[in-house]
Image (cartoon, rainbow over all chains, first blue to last red; front, top):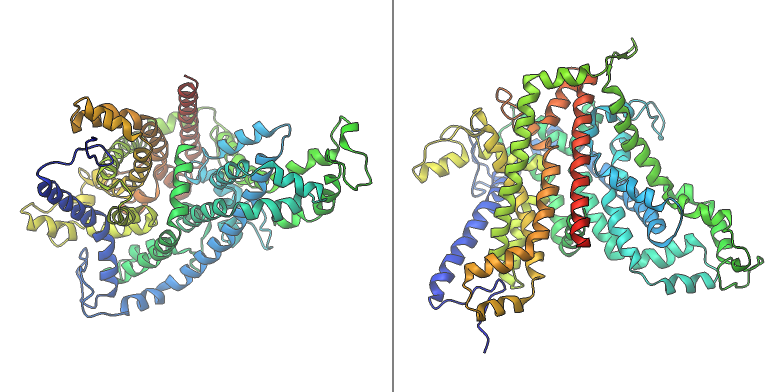
Length: 291
Length: 325
């Protein structure tokens, strides 16, 4: 006869209703602390009631799209478009080059493999925050592959530095190692070369890992702040993160308009997370446990 | 870009396949007869790695090395750089602003990492398990993690507005607590920034701990219960020891990340008021981009980089030793 336990192993108490009551209270506290602040953002954006500086709405009374419209009038549309371009192109390139690299690292034995792994690890210690100043100088020296000047104030400058990222390389390498060698060998017997094997055999099997990499890559590129701060000098190159901060710095707009810009920044990430939650949590564990 | 680099390799890759041990209908003899691998086989992995290595080279290694180099120069555009030895380092570390920035960064990184881990652990105990309502709550609590830091900072700068009309202050007013200055006072600004950081990172730690809890063998609890261990003793002697590897990772990675805190501080306070929330990276950004003192900024970045490398190596070394033991 085993003692009934919860997952943690706390024995079910006799005064169950009391414990239950405490639990519900704590649940309510979790919602109050982590969800209500985000909700006030939504409510404030759609609330037609004028608010003082520092005040937020709890309910969207006198429902209005006015704040959103004003925010779009002051550059949110442009920022959204820029962020979408940078994230779309950047994510595609990031996943592609990471998958290529992972194929070599997971499926090939070659001299220098350990050195490459070390180099990938080393890049994790070189985030934009640590190399901001020289990165800015490098961006001013490297020619834009799309033509016209250097990488400063260009889409290439916003995109290329985020394409090479260690995390998707780790996620994809780890996953590709689990694919049985027999599949690859039988394709090779049929006369398939490395590119054919990569695209026809390996990549289709990697779909879950590709999804995980894409979710993380999306959030990583979408949230970029320091890199656009260094690169995007003219307002028409500003990504949405920069638009949000410059809107609030101007102090001319009310709380509702500023929150509207933040909301536009938040909604895509939340949608991506809610749709692909399972992929996301799997990546979270590989990412944090493997370093 | 990547596909262009790869395109011409397609045909060679196909030909190379015939060199495999199975032989096949190829026009080349089987590889077994030639012990030295053909050049193609050496080249293939490097061609697949080429795009990533090129990007890392240009946007990671080049800036890192150049930054170290610039640390020893007075950087003068158009005039040529002047070698100054360790001057940039000594000047920077004699700057009171940087000294306080270092101090703030260490306090901030240490305290937020510990606080989020504790809160995350508490949340994990409360919200673990496969039940539907708990999963829903976990998902909801996780929303701050996926929300962009800029949006989070923007939201909280409104919620933490000083004066009794500020959102959080009016809530505190209902509880009979006086209005707090939060971000506007040098005495409370750093703590307020940390509050926002913990709010955003505790649910992240929660998910890690929930996964860790799920991996603990249930029989350990039952055995402990049969031995007469109470809830607290089971937590103390079963749960916490089982989670200690995960906890170490959460703490060390969080600490390393915390040392480069930038966005939330730059958006919430800009380093103020009166430099009370200045961090290493906000200092570097201001010195380098705004004051145009690239040498000093590079010197400070170089030190930050070396500390990061040191801490990472220590973590890896420690983890390997643990795994070996």
